[in-house]
Structure formats: structure tokens, C-alpha cells
Image (cartoon, rainbow, N blue to C red; front, side, top):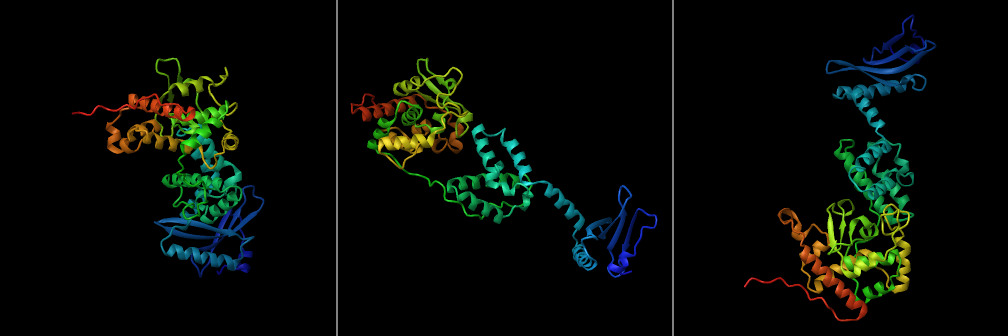
Length: 406
């Protein structure tokens, strides 16, 4: 029997619950009649049946109500051709169905659950913001993870970039990192972010402030959170987020040698970092109002401390007359000026909590010194330098010079 519209219309179950009639001219191409679970109707569909590795396989081409005889025959021919070439079409379809269950959003949730154990809360919030918030990659959330294309990603980056190229660049980096994880986990075969245009974000800066600019910024700092943070950044060469998130519990203010212990979970390299506090830095910290219910020195409501960076920067720029600089430029400036006044490079790296240069590779494995005395001397020397710049007075601290073997 040739399966066509007329012949299949005449087929009946005749008391059976399931029946497949096969086409004589195309072995494996069939028409299936099956009684519904409640017995109220007969379900009709087109199928292909074949053997693979000694086992029978069956592929559903589609219901007869939507797929005509000629269209079904053409579809069956394509399936049987793939079978003839050695493919297991049914297994491929099962695999596709399984992958379709792995939606972009479902795997984002799995990824965030893993990252929650690995990164700081602030970092987790940033990752969640870009991946889970519909504002950014919402149109991709329902797509199968491995079906997100480069075109899909590129169109979203264009949309995000209409508001901010900087945000688009961060969103792209976050998405790419997520797909690297998916690739390593065997969930996808490629990263659809690769090859997309990278939005122009904040270009790396090489700005080093002059002494005049540094003094202008220092003098323009008010007795508020932002002013204290900027002055501490100048004195300690710390990152703005580290100072902005400073906690009273991290400080040892009453010891003979006051210090600040930055915990690993707040440092960029995940290492504890201890900085001695010289008199000027100590006075700034002690001058900060202390709230009984809050361990953080700065900020009022944020769980990460100070948050009004943009507003503070604009106001400080206006008062100081210095523009086009960032708090991170202060860190670069301090490192540069420390070198200018005689601080050794490896001590500057220790002040900055860098694990590069003299602490990279095998050298860092064996050299575990914190250079505590040298760091204290460097910060004392630097603070004295800042004081002399700000007040116009003479320097009082004499640089420490190691005794050379003779």
C-alpha cells in the first residue's frame, strides 16, 4: 500500500488500540493510529521506523492534522537518508529535547548558585544584575542555552549600548564568562559572545596626578565620607572600594602600632592585607562618625559601605578645579611618587598588595615576607611627603636605607 491522503483516510483500528501501516515503496515510512488515553478519539500521525545497532527506533514526523501526505513523505525521505548515512535520528532528537530543557535562564540560576560560594556578595550582585535582570539579556532567557547565537548576543549588546557603552562592555564580559563556564561544563560547544563587537568601555588610564593636582584635590576634600575616603586613598594607596567598604572591625586603633587588616574576601587578589596607619590616616579614621548599629565607617544604607561615587566625584571636581581623573589614578600616582622619593619597587608592590613582579611565580611561593618594617617606613615617608606638599613645610621623615654589606 502506498500511503497517501486517500489510503490513510480509509485506515481503521478495528478493535486495536495501536496500529502502524507502512508504505510499500518507502520502507520505514508509516502512518500511525492510536487510541487516546481516555478512549474518546483516534490520534493519527506520520512516523519513520528504522533499526540502529540492532534496536528499533521510531521518529515522529508530525500529526496528520497538520502534516499532509506529500509533506510527510518528503520529511520521511530526509530522515531515512540520514539513517542510511549512519545517524541515529531518534537519539539526536532526544538529545535535542534534553538540551531544550536547559534554557538560558535555568542555567544562569545554576551558575549563580555556584558563584554564590565563590565570590564576594558585591560581585555576585553584579553578575546577577547582568545575567538575570530582563533589562539586559531578557530576550535570551527562554532560549535553549546552546541555541543562543552570536547574532542574538550582538543585538542585545547594541540595545544595551544605546544607554551606556560602559554598561554594555561589562554585560558582554559577564556573559562571556558565563558561557566559558557552560563550555567547560559540557553544556554548550561554543561561546556565542566570541566574535561580537566589544563596546567601547572605560579605556585603561595612565594618568598620574602632579603634586599641584594632588594638593588641589586634598584641599578640596570636605569633612564628609567622600572627602575622608579620597584622603585615605591618597595616604594608603588603597583601592576606592576597599576604603569605601572599610569596617571598624578591620581596624586596630588602640594598639601601639595601629593598623588596618583588609580581609581576603574584600581584597582583589583574595589575600589578607595589613597596612600600618600613620598619624594623618589615623586622625581621618578617628574623625569619622561611628554608628552603633553599623560596622561600616562610610555610607548609610548600602551593605558595601559608601555608594555615592558619581555625585561625590562631580562635587569634588568642581571644588578642586581638577577634571578627568579617577580614584584609581590616585593609586597609580602614589606608586609613582613613592618611587620618586626613593621607595623600592618591591616595597611599593607590597603596599599596593600586588602579587606580581617579585612575588609572582616561584619567587612568590618561596618569598612569603610581608616586609612589615619596610612598608611602615614607606607609608611614613609618603605621609610626610603629602604633609609637606599640603602645608608647604619641610619633610621630617628620613628615608630608610638598607645597610650594604661591605
